[in-house]
Image 1 (cartoon, rainbow, N blue to C red):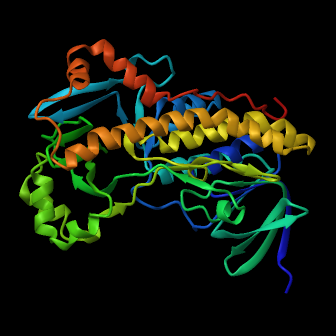
Image 2 (image 1 turned 90 degrees about the vertical axis):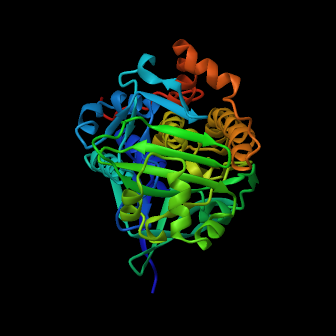
Image 3 (image 1 turned 90 degrees about the horizontal axis):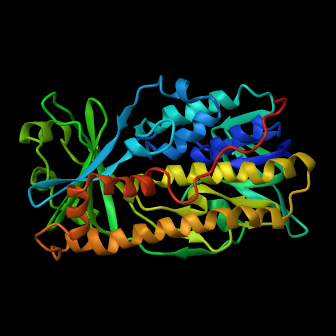
Length: 409
């Protein structure tokens, strides 16, 4: 039986932050767009939940910020680091020149559902949930479509442009023959939740002490916790048993034994993130473009992955919406997207690799000096300096602004 067929201008594989934002922006510009998302819903835990000021400014430029902030969220204006029994201020976002100078923590499923509902206000947007892109369609050296499995039904989608926004394990970038450059990641992260008591501080912080790195993120009635381990050692940690794991967590946190026993009954409450830092050497080929994690997997350092993905989507819409409207997207047009976003990607990943190799790895190996490093002491002493990491983390390198048109506007 021949597969069902859809013809559209742009087909986006992946309904994550990059894919859903790009779908919204293109639909807003009057472009026919189809987003295919392999999952039936967005409900997956321990995904990127940090919306940085750069992302919130994009939402403001679209006129949606007030509506977004009506959803349940937590607001972080400062970040600190703890080491040697002391706490040091690291970043202060309150002085950034944006509408919302803070990091907003919101479950990613709420954020994606919000973008999807906004996109569905446009008649030229279509999102197919539970639809998995499985192969690409080539014609004369150009990618002209993809085939998907939609609930057991084969679906052929023809488009002027296929965008892979299907994450760090993208199958489509491999199918397109694009080469991945691996930068290395010496860490993995074991994520879990711990309930919050009224007596707890609200501070989001990282703890760095010899042999241990721990991150706690304020999420209202619970803490989102990250226990950092050397690459590939999560299985060893779990092999030592849940009691040993709880003891290791207790040594780095103020959480009492009763709370940890209740919230960490066994390792089913723990999710292991295998950290990867990589990027494509070339993000495109005729008729095909990768953005977001499909183009560059980020470390969790700084929590910037979702925001880099959003910036990719905004730049793609800015550069390609007019070309898509005229039906004349060339490989040179796609190269402009990579040229625009490659520098901030490379610089951000370089900074993450430095943090991994010079701070996290030595700490986990017990090789870090007992005293706080000079930069951390300076940040703790001079509040004005905290605006620098706030700018780098909150806004990133080359923040994008919505330039794509609004159809009829």
